Length: 143
Image (cartoon, rainbow, N blue to C red):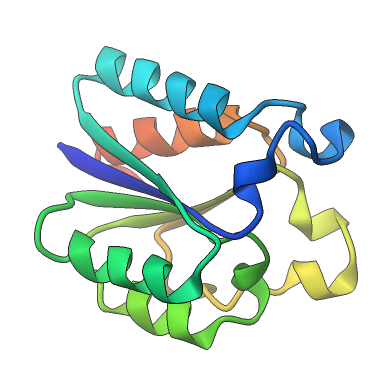
């Protein structure tokens, strides 16, 4: 199974962001964990992060040709990027939305996801473990 993990805006500065919300882990540490979990689950993972919305959209398009599953954390784009919604809507493979913090218990504007109704699953507030759970769900075929 081939899975792409797409992390969006400001996730490159994990470790500098509020550790009570984001766990104090850096993006590099998060990606290392994701690759370790993937190896144990015997799947192939490609992790990507960008602060450029168009690049995120292009990576969704790229996933059309090779990915068997997609994990997305668009960051703040989750709440307003219709371009990212349109790109995710094109995917015919399961997509799981992950957020390190519990966006459902934060500011009102964070409680809305433009991906609602498109994703096969949504995991919030579990920190890095949310990515592990998403990988397991995709590999087990039950997102």
